[in-house]
Length: 348
Image: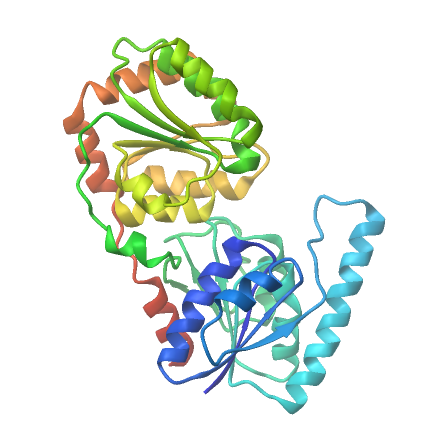
C-alpha cells in the first residue's frame, strides 16, 4: 500500500511520524514523507531505508505579524496546489498527518482526491492547524484519552492510540523507583527560566537537603546554578542538554518539568511521579498536565502558583514519604503501544 505521511516543522511532530513510518516500511508498505525546511535534515537522516521524501514550502502562522501570517498562508496554499498535482499522478492509498501547519497541504490534497486521511493530535487540546483540517479527515488519532476542542460537528472517528516514543522509553516501562531521593528538573531551552527561578531556592529551604538534583537549563544559566547549589551544599548536576532522557527519568524518584506532550507521555511510559508546570501561554500544555494529574501520579500546577514556598513544602512531604512516591509512580504508568495502534488504524 502507498502511504503518504505528512509531518510538521518541529521534532515533536517529526519523531512520531518517523516511528510510524519505520513500522509501516517493516510491514511492507511504500512510504513517502513530506516536511518543510525546518526539519528537512532531521527527516533525511532518520527516515527508514526505502522511504521517499517530499519537500514542501510551509511555516507556522501564529504569533507573527500580519504580513508574515499572510506570507505563511501563501506558502501553505502553494504547497497544497503542488501536492494536489502530485497526487493526480502519484495517488497514495492513505494519507497520515502528524499535525502542524506543514501537514495542512497534504490533508487538503487528499480531500480533493478522496484519499482516506488520518490525523494525529499530540496534545490533550487540539491545535489550530489540526482543528482547521478536521473537516477533511476520516479518523483523528489522539495521544491522550480525551482531547479538548475537537469540533462537535466533525464526522471524524476519534481513536485513542497514544503518542510514539523512542524504544529506550518502552524498554524501561514500569522501572522501579531508585529510592535515592533523586530529583530531575527539565524545562527545555525556552521553558526553563521559571524552573531556574523557583526550584533551587525551594530545595535550599527544605528541611532535608539530602537529595541529588539533575537540573537541565539554558547554557547561559549553567554556571550560575552550579554556584548556587554548591554554596548551599546541595549535590547537583547542572547541564544544558540531557543526552539520555530515558535514563535520566529512570534514575529519578521525582521529576519537575514543563507540560509538552512528548515529556508527559515519556513520564507515563516509564511511570514516574512528577510536578508539571505548564508553559503559561500554552493551553496545550495545561491540558496535557491536567490529563497526567488525573492519573494520580503527580501535580499539575499553574505557573502563577508555582512558588518557592509551595514547592519546598511539597518536596519535603514527598521525599519524606517514599511509599507515596512509589504509589504515584504506579498510578502514572500507562502502557504505550502507539506505533502499533497507529499503524493498525491506518492500514485497516
